[in-house]
Structure formats: structure tokens, C-alpha cells
Amino acid sequence: MATEKGYRKDLALEKGLPSNLDAERFVLGSILLDDSLFPEVAGLLGPDDFALDKHRRIFRAMGELKQAAGPIDRVTLADLLHRKGQLESVDGLGYLVSLDEGLPQIANLESYCRIVREKADLRRIVFAGQKLMDRALLAEESPEEILRDAQAGLLAMSDAGRRSGLASAEDILLGYPGGMQRFLNPSPECGGLATGFARFDEMTGGLHPGDLVVVAGRPGMGKTALALNVAAHAAGKGKPVAIFSLEMSKESLLARLLCAQARMDVHKFRCGFVNADERRRLMVTANALCEAPLFVDESTMPTALDVHAKLRRLKLARGALGLAVVDYLQLMQSAKKLENRQQEVAHLSRSFKLMAKDLEVPILLLSQLSRGPETRPGDRRPILADLRESGAIEADADVVAFVFREEVYKPDREDLRGLAELIVAKQRNGPTGTVNLVFLRQFTRFENRTADLEDGRLPLE
Image (cartoon, rainbow, N blue to C red; front, side, top):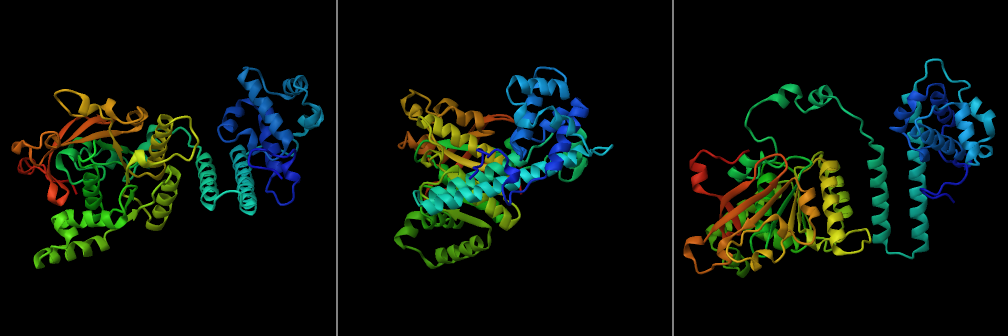
């Protein structure tokens, strides 16, 4: 049986496999008639998209001739195949001559390529399905492993099928949501998803689709609390939000969300010391959360592929995604077997950036920091070099922000109580700097400083 990449000699002869041999011949024949067409075809097709082995050999040889800056015609092609010992395997010079037989005078090359590509995709789906069935019948692996690999293969096929071409400035402007006028509109309103933190939204323009936003900090600084504040604000505005919690159960996470939004003391709530007014606030908040498009996943050891698949399904179900939160990177594992943890974290980081771009959603990825801040004398504020286990996190992220509360290191200082900083250490498309916030420990909630709101910096809707 043929596998995804290990094709038999002539796939078209296998019963039931989709193919269109005329379209394949017309693609190759069009190149022989005009070798300037090869780059156009190579941008749409690869050798493995052809069903017949001889067509794959011919296309590869054409690529070698083009790479050597030589002409592509019957003579040069036959000569190269002869030197490679492959001329007989493609049925000789006679077959090369016949490739353009029946080719219309006005060739529709793009349509031929599309047909070849579609048939190739159908064959790959057949191979993936057969491989999945074989592994299930052998029962040598767990269902989770088989399903994870199947999802990876299907996602790879989907990504490979989207071979985006070059776009002109006109294409980009006219294709922008709202058209050219919206793109050129100098209005200062937030173009991305508002977080509810006025100074941060002012600095970043909100969280934009396709952006990987890394929020990092030492344990106890409030990374999760900040992320939940942002998630609740977005969901409250009707934006579908998915939270992947690797550290907390969904019940614990919901309890923190409830307390933060209702301004309820978390400890009192857990101990059951709730008075009538607090119970009323909790009920109002719970009803609001039930109506909000907020979704929680508590899988203990998910891979980036698991997250990708669940987000894709949610986007299909809801029609759009507003935000994805992953808490946190260092608790995840890579589906790929890599040499060390640094490579694994780098692979995960890159996967989340590609995921954000593919799904057109901002991903808020929480990350631990190394012990660097504790070992530095004086200023304990984190820097980019403190990102734990991989410098690739910094490279992949569009925004890197550190949560810092000096009161954690100086608990006896009353003047530091409740003061927090969100340090934007990297921003690919904007300035860096520090956003001062207030942290209400009893509610596990971050808020804007009163001074920022009095200056007219209202949270963006």
C-alpha cells in the first residue's frame, strides 16, 4: 500500500485513487512549449502533486534545468533524463514529444494546475485515512497518540494547501476589512482587542489578530490574574475567549474569575464566609459569565497541536475568535521528539506564533521567568534575558510584557502595597515602556490607576 510520501510507481493505476492525467500532461506540455511558465507552475505545484511516477520525474528534471539556467525543451529534457538513467522510465523521447498533444491553443494553465493540486490533495486524504485505519487496527499505540498524529497530518495538509502568492499594495488596501478608507483612517481608537487597561491599550493599540503576546513573571506576581482580567473584559464585550489552564482546575479558575469580577475576597469565598450582599454580587457576576462567550479547557498535558485543533473547532462553531489564553508555556509538552527542553520550548513558541497567524486571533501566552531577578542585586525588575528555557520566546513574540510587583520582594514596605507594573519590554510594532497598575490582592484583580483615568485615559471598548 502507498503511504503519504512513499508513492508506488504509478498511483493513477491504483483503483479508486483520484487523478487527472490529461491535466498533468497539459501542465508539463505547456512548460515544454514555453519554459518561462515553469516558475508559475512551481509556485503552485510540487513534484509529488503528480500522480504518475514518470510525470514526477519529468517535473523534477525541469526544475533542475531551470535551476541551471538552461532552456527547458524536449531535447534538453531528454538529455538530462538520459544522463540520470531515467529516460526509459518516462517512456523515452516519444512520450516527451506527446505531452502537448491535444493541448488547446489557448492554454488555461492555472486551471490545469488547480485540477492537479486538488486531485493530489484528495489522494493525500486517502493515504491519511488508510494510515489512520491501519494504526487503529494494529492497536500498538494509544488512541490519543493516533488522533494527535492524524490531526497533525490534516493540519499540515491544510497549511500546505494555502500557498499564498505575492500581493500588491492595491490588493492589501482593498482587501482590508472596511476597505482603503478604514485602513487609512487616522482615528486613534483601538484597532485591536481592548484589554481594559487604558495605558497598555494606548501603548499597544490593543491585542491584534495574529499576534503572540507573552506575559511573563516570577511565581506569585499575578500572571494568571492579569490574563483572567483581560479574558473577562474581552468576553464581557461579546468576544469569544478560550482559556487553556494547565495549572488550575476549571472550577478553581471560574472561582477566581467570579471573585475578581464581583470584587469578592477569594479567601472568604473559599471558606464559605459570604454575606447576603456578597452573595447577590456573586450571583449577578455568575449570570453575566454564563452569558459571556467564555470557554475553559483544563487538559493537564496538552500539546500545541491539541490547542490548535480545539481553537479551530471553536472558531468554526462560533464564527470568530476574540482571544486565546494559555497558562502557561513551561507546563506544555511538544508533540515532536526533540533533543532537549530548550529546543522543545522553542518549537512550542514558534507553534503558537504560527497558530495565532493561522487562526487570526491574538494569543496571550503566559511564561515563567528564570531566577535571574532574584540573583541580581538592587533592581529586581525582569529583563528579556530572564525568559526561561529559550530565547526563541523573545524572537517569536510580537509583544513581551513582564508583571512586576516590588512588594513581593519588600513585604514590609507599606508604600509598595498594591502597586504593580506591566513592563512592555518588547513590541514589534510600537513603543516599549512601563504601565503602572493597581493590584487588589484580596480580589486577585488588576485595575487602572485612578490618575490614568483622571487624565482621560479611559479603557478602550
